[in-house]
Image (tube, rainbow, N blue to C red; front, side, top):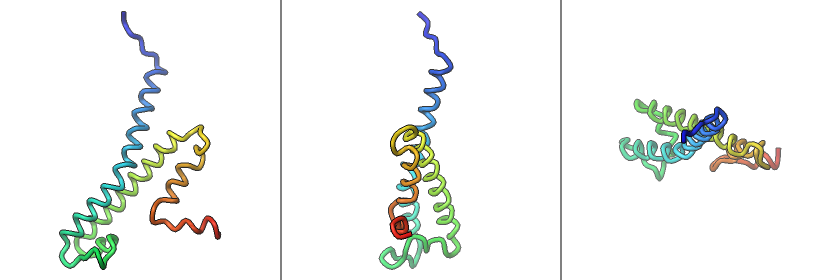
Length: 116
């Protein structure tokens, strides 16, 4: 017996694979940013994690590495948010879930939502 795949089944499988790829980008973004930052911090002479923020690694001759890290990680986070939007679409949090996940990420001062 031969299996027949309709275009709807193929489209659904393709959509699922795309959503998984988008979500994977979001999952990889945080650890990648941390690992690249820590590698730079431990190999950069004079840099001390107890005194300096990771963002200071963008200064100096090798600053382009941290700038690239910021840009690439940010892009991966945005792609991950698009994946969250696809998963949440049609659910209760579908309209604001991905947006809230983007704006209320760790380290972001969310109090402006309460106080205007």
